Length: 312
Image (cartoon, rainbow, N blue to C red; front, side):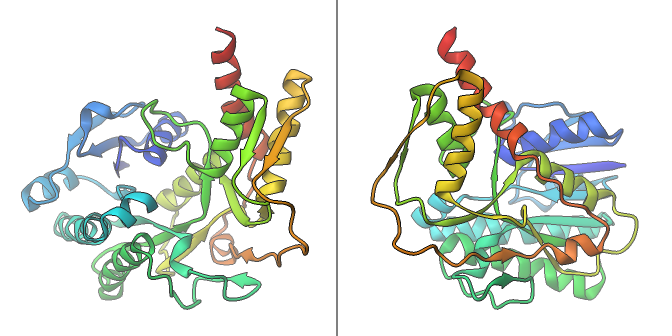
């Protein structure tokens, strides 16, 4: 199988390329607009020009599956909403057009949990109303809609993957992943022995280890059959308060160093426990995927990197 992975210089793609290379015999094509920043194991490197259909079609030649991970993050989307639409929607549409022309079988588009907006109930399912108008969410929703049109026509298979909050060690040292909650907290405690938490610790997050993200994307890429759902949720299915995430990381730190972790919260704890939500994985599980997120191992990899750095 020949798999094209876009956004190859980015956080998720870097880890995915390493994972696929280690666990499959697929021919991997790593595509990026910044090829010099791309690291990780892969078979072929291509420089994508989204303004050129010819460039995109050449990249898609002989490809069976595209995993489209190129996109803007929340901060850059807010700073440049038009740019977010260009990257997350327009460029996605152009790549799908090229994929259809080259008869690619499956297109997996990485979207985001944030398309749902404010929690609409105790369980968040794919059929819920998408109401978030933030440029990050809205531009990804537009990308989903473009893919959805091609899926309805039957001109290509695939789905959008609505990812929650991933964390873990990046493959690329230049990756801008250290603002992610779990990564930030693990780095803080490893470097300083304490965590500065910019809240009372009550906000809720569904976090998912990066290894689990890679495992799920591999499952969808190699799934033997038709992906009948236009969108699938991808998370751990476990909702934690930031306070609980910090305590879990602190416990791993203490186990490694025998030092007592220190927690500094910006505000006092909440007077009431927030209502937890469930980010439903029922549709993904119905395909045969069995979630098994290993939080401890992923946390340890981040801690070990910075604990080693501080002792060198």
